[in-house]
Amino acid sequence: MKSPLLSLPGAVPAEGVDEGVAAHYGDLFREQRALADGTGFVDLSHRGVVTVTGDDRLSWLHLLLTQHLSDLPTGQATEALILSANGHIEHALYLVDDGTTVWAHVEPGSQEALIAYLESMKFFYRVEVADRTADTAVVHLPAGSIAAAPESAAVRETPYGRDLFLPREELEAFAADAGPAAGILAHEALRVEQHRPRLGFETDHRTIPHELGWIGTAVHLQKGCYRGQETVARVQNLGKPPRRLVFLHLDGSEVHLPPAGAEIRLADDGPDGRKIGFVTTSVRHHELGPVALALIKRNVPVDARLMAEDTAAAQETVVEP
Image 1: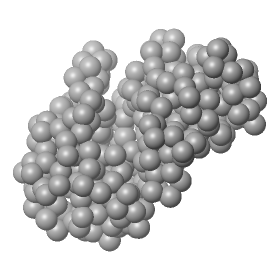
Image 2: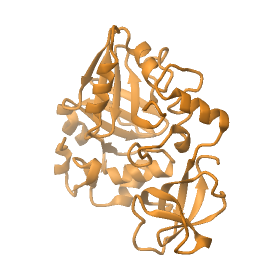
Image 3: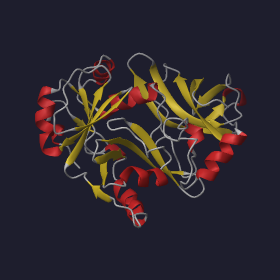
């Protein structure tokens, strides 16, 4: 989905999975500061949108997802995962129920696989699953924003701001009244600052929820019946996920950021040391400078000095070892 807001002055298209919206509008740090101050908005209209309707929608999703959803109050935002049989993360959903419909936004392009799985699990339940990506645009308003949500939008309110599920034909009119636009790079910088994982960035084919701190926000430990629950319970009881998410403060004298996938080694081991992890997302933050999220081996000491390729890095604990 190519956003019409790419025609705004200064818009530079994003690449990779975020293709279709703006990376920035000419001033990355100004856009970050605006979001941090609670002004402006972020065009996330490239994200997939899935809805579930029907009388059984919450009880049915409760059986399939990692979150407790059977009694989800109307208007309360939550997150949920779909796991493989081995407990590896396959989908991340950002949900709200408006009283008649569950709205969820997901990673760009992942909605088809998600819908295929949901359709295969309908059985006798009174539910209807729909791909609403073509007619619905996701827009993010930062925490503290006083911008009004259109009456036509479903609203998902979180501690980090509001996600609006907006009719796509209203996107340009909304943007004209919502204040300065911020690109996806500004949104990503604040996400990294907030230590929030993103599917496909902080995850690979073997990531489990405990490694990323998704326990509590996207996984409810007092419910069962979902695929992959055995792995969640085992790791919760043993307390030993193989890896853990960390926040890295990177050496600001380096010109280039270590890219996603860059190998992490112990600084004391030198350039030929063994790999103990990898960078997942690296950004330039308007206050913190160059920072990153990374996955490292669980038993790496929390005070160990690290190297991300050739860049020195100090770690800040996100997931306790």
